[in-house]
Length: 396
Image (cartoon, rainbow, N blue to C red; front, top):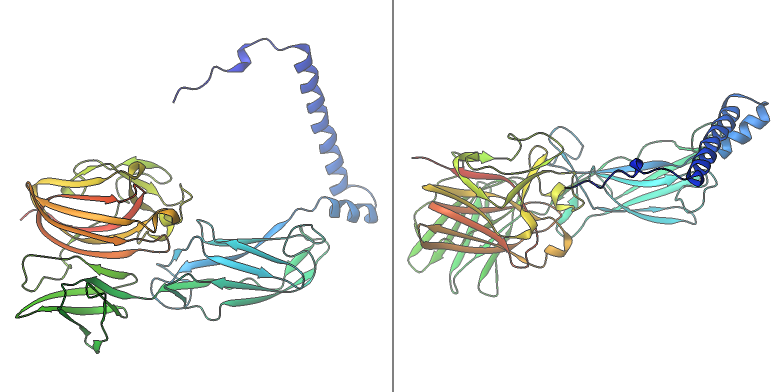
């Protein structure tokens, strides 16, 4: 990017000199007044001046994705962005959403205008999980008492902190099915109910653990084994290799965290994960405002996305397997549009799958694509999708 010519090379007019001198004088006078207010004068004057110098502070409610479903914030859990939290007082109500660090912030200032906590009293903070999400950290409401403390920075303080809100998704396994086919899904604990939607899609509500999915079409049964962790799973519509498909334990995980430094973006280079990349960018999760860059991540600090919303490709002259990966979208406006995944072996198109992603968290796409040479991933409306922890098998 070309920088503009520095304006300092031009001669300054006497008007500019006078204005800058006046500004400098104002800074000096302000500094003297502040110093006097903080360190001089009688006790009464000092108390009044401290009050005049107050600034609002935040009372923050932290929101996290409870990766291990423990009900408390601990190692491995991740900040959660864009969760709505309502702050409610006796005569005030303010809505905040958690930021990219997971904090929903509310201002407090004794006697302040337009802030939630302006007077002592009891305030409620209520979290509103989105569709498909639930709290593990107890009730959705936190009640906190605030009291006046004259010498504190804001003049008012909380008697306790807001206990963090932990979220988990309502887990499902879903996929497409031929009309008339039957689907059975079970774990070691037994089978679960399977819903067939419009005769073309199946859906089952599950819990974390190992699951077996049998799709039965006439005399042919296709068996898929799925390990559900902290994300719902969508299965690809495989059309070949109806025999049992191996679990994904032997895959190499490409996590986008180990080839660049923090707090930056970079084009993903060919050779990373032993495959080639086109139109892929790795970004630190806090560099963009889209909540999907934070919520879809499953490991480390980086995720990958398709630059400018255009299709992105993974390829190799040597066939590889795309086992699966975690997918979502960066922005809420992208949620109504499909993510489309296509796989080729040479010039032959082997598979086309589509599903909807969200900004609220990752969806695991169980591709199970075998011996492919190119995979193209796109958005039907050219929005940015977000990917983390792709699982590949390369070599023999």
